[in-house]
Amino acid sequence: MSTSPALPPKPRRLPRRPASTLAEKWTRIDGIDVFYRESPRPPADRRVMAHIHGFGLSGRYLLPTAERLADDFHTFVPDLPGFGRSGRRKDMLDIPDLSHATADFLDDRGVEKATLVGNSMGCPVIIEFAHRYPERIDRAVLVSPAGGLHNQPLRRAIGQLSADATREPTRMARVAVPDYVRFGVPSTLRLFRALTQYPSLQRLLEMRIPTLVVLGQRDPLLPHAHRVDEIASQTDSHVLVVLLEGAAHAINFSHPDQLAHVIRLFMDDQPIQNDSQWPGHVRLYEVHRGKHHPRPTSGSSA
Image 1 (tube, one colour):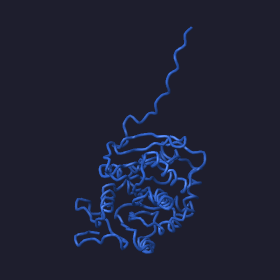
Image 2 (cartoon, helix red, strand yellow):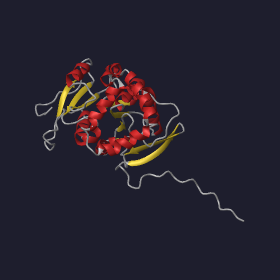
Image 3 (cartoon, helix red, strand yellow):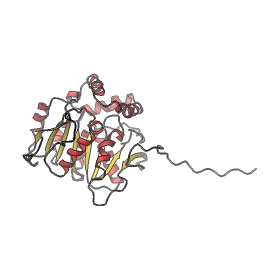
Image 4 (tube, one colour):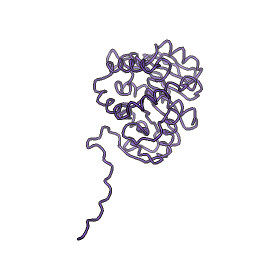
């Protein structure tokens, strides 16, 4: 009796309806399958921008902002190993490991230097990347940085996250909850410990690249703006801090038009200006500007 030939392995399936206008792709790095999104037709001369997700999440919630910048920059949005649809590593990643995983991803994509845009935990990952690989980062955009003393202990952070959930768009839950469930409680406890032990402030003050910090005025995970200004003023040149009125923590998801707008201005060394088409309760305010950043013109609304 004849036997049927062995069937070839099934190709890895993507969702029938892509979640993004960015191209959805896979690569394999150090034996781990890594899922990422990329500008579908990136021009060769565009600056590279990679978006780094937060604690327990995939890159999916970063897409609203990343998509708005995909025509201006060669855009990447990876799920770092252990997060989202990417494979897990046997050992749990900490902040230095995640910065190294970011460098490995850029190596795999043939990227020598990039601007990195992070949200929440993605910000200390970027800060560590700048510490380890200063020659490989052009600029840093830190949106709603997390992990400092203001978020300790864990029960306090959980309370802050619970308060933030009521301030985010309801559709955010459809994106975040599956990611958190997939990430799991044991991973959450281990990574939270690593996040709170990471010296974010010290590393930030050591950075010497142009850095934009964007804060949500309604973000319960962050200290008050005057404390942020006090911290930022310890640097003499590289930090620009902007407050977004009406926003909470997940600004990349809730206010993509405003965030993409301020990122473009920052990347082109332009003054921070508001758009007259925005709703009246949404405004950008400059909190701190290092001396090497250009001052706003008289027409600015910052």
